[in-house]
Image 1 (cartoon, rainbow, N blue to C red):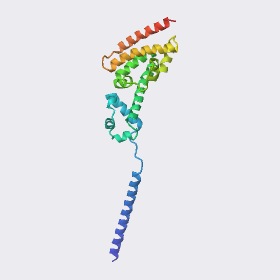
Image 2 (cartoon, rainbow, N blue to C red):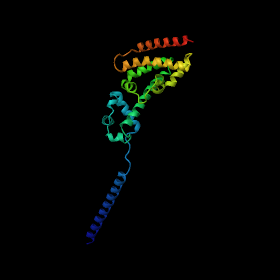
Image 3 (cartoon, helix red, strand yellow):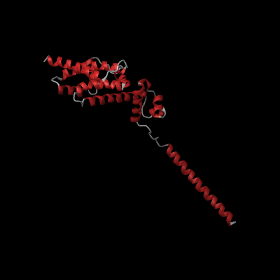
Length: 225
């Protein structure tokens, strides 16, 4: 009789422990379900991957599905960080602009900074043709009424370039701006040919042509004084 009673107690204790453990586990699951999901991909990581996709295949390839596949995730991850694809595209354009800025920044550290800016611009078109076309072969969202407003609006390094010209040559800021406009037009033509695959200039050709144009412009401007 006592033995049966002991078995009954042992079973009761087992079931009590089992039900307690089950209730604790259920409570933990409920609490976990109410916790905000961990962010696996930050905004910066998504922008970086999107930029790489555009680098490889162009802006038209930047879709939620293609980006999610490259991330190894679902589109829900993207829209957890961005309201829509237009917002992400704006961020990607900004990131692409910073790539150009870095090219120009390095050029301005050169012994002949202004000429090197033109070389860097063409080098950017050669190394990053998709980004070049994204930034310079698409209509501007902000209409540009006068050409003299183009570089200040499009070039994040505009003032740094002008400062380098004025520091090295006997020109006013206005003359430096005009010189930069001329060289930009020339450099842009060469860069567009490179980015579109029409012709790949060698570095010797780039330096030689830009030097000739630059020297001619400087001679013309300084000679008038």
